[in-house]
Length: 572
Image (cartoon, rainbow, N blue to C red; front, side, top):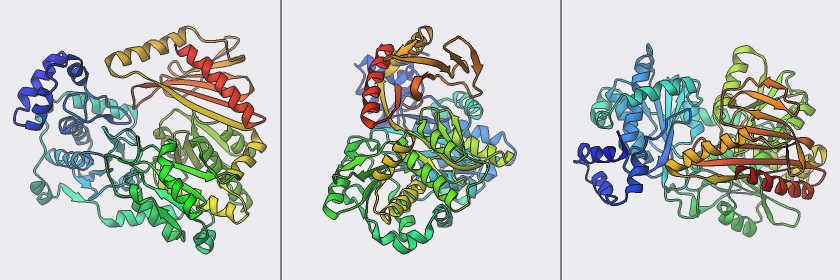
């Protein structure tokens, strides 16, 4: 069926839904807009689905949510005893999140699957924890993470608390496609409650999560005795982190936490920022104003679903610097390993895990403590897989996992990135350094001096719409057909093609890498530098990662700029 037929079908099938019909009639003369909304359905994979809010098959709306849920329910009903175990459902502060969460619960109920719905917004890590704690078969969280306000999403978790693995996601997708949008009706809320197919998650789950996060403190006595001495400014960026982040820090003894009031209340319009992304400097504007006025030591920001953490710290001149995800990851990794080593508690089989596009500086830190550093594909589900593997085999003891995109985890009771966990650890590190008259910035420079000054930069080329998908495939095919021998004067020592699974060195020798298939190209360059190109899994863009290391930050910055220019030329 073509896009025009899909458009006409929706007008007929949902004729009683005035809001949807009016929205579709408003674009009647815009053929390109109709095509974009109906040329395909929202993709569903290991990260669930994500898209712009609106009417149409390629949009997030109650009908696409219902259809996805019907497919998930069909899959669960194929598994013996799974429907009774139920699905835990959470949501963040985005537009339509609460409505989509309830629709999810009621479609599950209609199909005989028990739904456990959180009564108000919760972070992603709480959902991940709840799935494991309640022994549910799956979880769903309605969120589009740090995307702009016009987006929302639907993420599915499996019984281990991690995002659904690829083979299961493929089976669910096939079941989703077996249904028409109009046939995926929800049960009435009153009927679902009466049949006990819908229940609300009890507060005891939140209490259990907070209790577990508190066990992650490495020096809890430091927080109890000196927590009031550290002054932090925190912004939840209108999202779900406000209550759990403040609660865990307060209960650990950190009482001098200043919250950015303009960004405290949940608001899916995110009125004070362009994009609610803690990677962006403008998200810290209000926090830094307060920090300067109140003499605070550092600033934190969590994204709407509270799985990512951004940090700003004072430099020697008194101004604030926004740390990168790689820098935060290395600071936390070094603190964990150094602290455990000094206390004689560093396990002999310790391991840390990072994504392939995260800094190699972390490997140098881990190796200096005799800790294995394991690379996985981008996506925290792959870090979760390693945690599960360690538990099943005893091969390693998991100590820390991170991605350059501001995701961190030091626990095993959550199987996704956790900004509540990270907030506690960064607070403890900042306090520990303060007792020594140092800052997070000072500690970062100490790490650079020991292992080399590292600079990383991520840029992207946005290619929206149907033509954009084809263009991304064309660019990646072109790079594979014409692999560069050098970039910015640095020899390419090897090319890792994660689509073929092969690493090919400069002499043409190949070796299997042993990771799942992914459309990623990684160029190993001389001097421990590297460049990586990959299409985003959640946004219509190709991402370019450039990482450099040198004897000084200035030299690393210059090399990074030259490498990025050379790599951008390759993309064109």
